[in-house]
Length: 186
Image 1 (tube, one colour):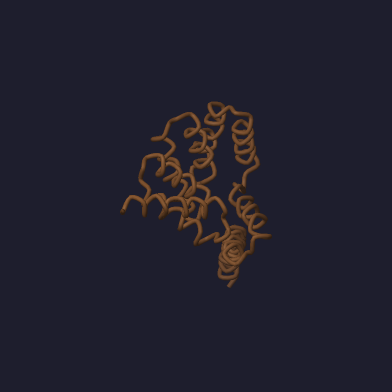
Image 2 (image 1 turned 135 degrees about the vertical axis):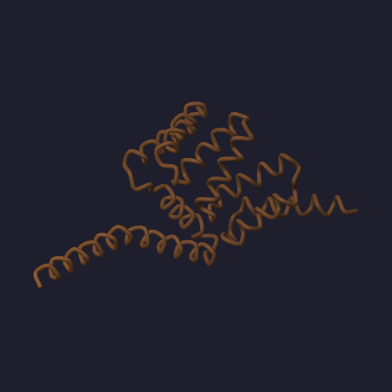
């Protein structure tokens, strides 16, 4: 009887630990799902705030050290030092390979350095890890336009608009690309 009671306690403890570790991930996902829903229903006055809340959720790695690397990489980009940013984002990717923001930051840095191939590879990884990363989609659309793949760029911008109907950048790009593509048909 004592053996069964002790075994039962071990099982209950293991279950509590498993649930305790999974709840923050579930809560973050639930929050993101709600924010994406709010973004889809937002008006012109609130969509930027909700976009910011989503980006804030994306930037939570769960590690103070990884958050510091992300912050340093972003600061280097803001200071016009994409080569330094690559170093910070590479360290972030090396230590947190499942954290999409590391890849996205490095993709942005590579793009600014004129390294389109590595930038595309990191955008791909960003979208594998976070398929609703509208910033990465927008970045990929910009590259597709530069490569004169207007149909692909249009499709990506429309995907952004499906998530965020108020995105001014995406709407301007859709209008511009549709005009260009219709002009080609004549």
